[in-house]
Length: 338
Image (tube, rainbow, N blue to C red; front, side, top):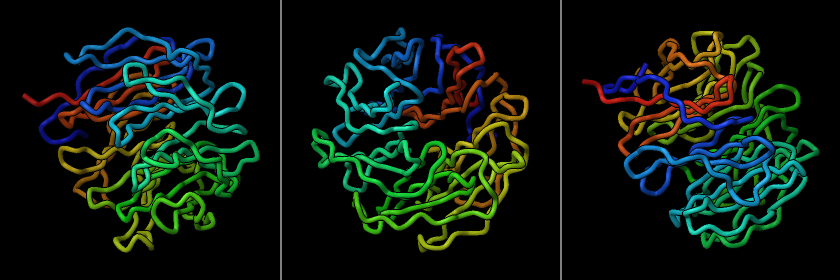
């Protein structure tokens, strides 16, 4: 399954010695940057050059990481990276070459990887699981991106990484896998709030084996995906009133990991990436834009040691980055069809 007018190429190696999954983010000019935990808790990165070749691996000075970082582009067109330290602290910094500043500590009591999202007004909010298993967040106080507000507790009892997403109605929704293995959701009551959230409520009938991943359909509705306990990929799509949900759906094919949705900017359909039962990269896609119908999964080869991470190039083509069983970063890209 691929976007019309494209074909999937072969996997290409980028080197590295990664001990956790990567994070991938696009710069303001569309070039990609990949960040990950390297050996000895170093935060390492590689970036595309202007000719779309790749730089050597470098380290973010002074950064000590444990887990998977989060990276996000602010409205000031600068990239920021957030990571959990071995001491359960949350740090934030700019990527070198992006008018970088020294990393700053923004929270403590962090028990899991961070996940970042832009609010409707452009401020960055970061969500994470606290050492007491509650979902917590920390946000910039303004779009100057200079000051972080104190951490706030949203509630819940989370396992794994929270999944925040900004819906077309301007409110952030946060999905988590609860300590009971169920899928839960909390939402901002009004756009941009840091303190006024709905209580967490259980969302799905099928328990979750994985942390959820969410994306927006082309019409702006949220669609959330997770791996069910039987290995199948499950999903829920929101209705147009941003209140009710359509009936739960299932993706065909057993998976070895969580499904990761990513919307193509070329045709607006969601592509779903996951590790298949053979631990190769598999892909499925929406049959039509905004549809609840998906194709069967098809293999793209590779040998995954973790989760696939998709990203979009400036021309709309998708690349998917994976950590191999040897710790080497590899990626596969949509190429233009002949």
